[in-house]
Length: 264
Image: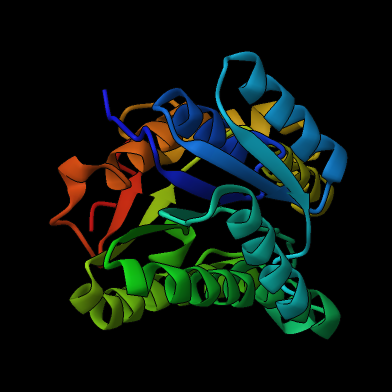
């Protein structure tokens, strides 16, 4: 559907879930994919799958919150492929708890990965895109970045920050023909959501007798007009569009992909 042949895409947090789906979709559209993840084995597995399909790829084990490792990611990408056309900031973590009892260390870690990591990667990639006068940056935010979410205050605050970062970068980079957009997923059954559901079951009395999947499904049905969750492939489809030529006049947007849960 979208011809990305000849383009090079970096996807962070690519070893599982949404990141894996995005990386596979971009590779399917013809892009060479650099799959970055703290789990080096998972990133290698992804790239092995991409290469099986005859596409080009490279795995990088790295931490998006460490400036030196981000610079290393850019250096390795340029060394292998010579250019950077697309960056998808997908790496993210979440934790739960009552905000006034939330540990400082956990707060700092979430901010470091979700917000600082997106900033570091976008800054480094954009510096390589600017001289070529072209580029696409997509940040994976969340509908939790559109409104505060009970028991997920740190995660929610970090994703509010990602949306603000997206808007500011879009304004600053537009003159260089670089678009910057965010995708705000709703409810996706991933390892991250499973961990969140475990916390809800352990800490919210009326949920104690339910499984993690039941908690997830109940939340989807109570909050989503379409009464169904989203999938990593849904997010990948939108990401592929946003990095394509067809989306060349869209920038600074934070697009909800949530079955209608948040309508603004």
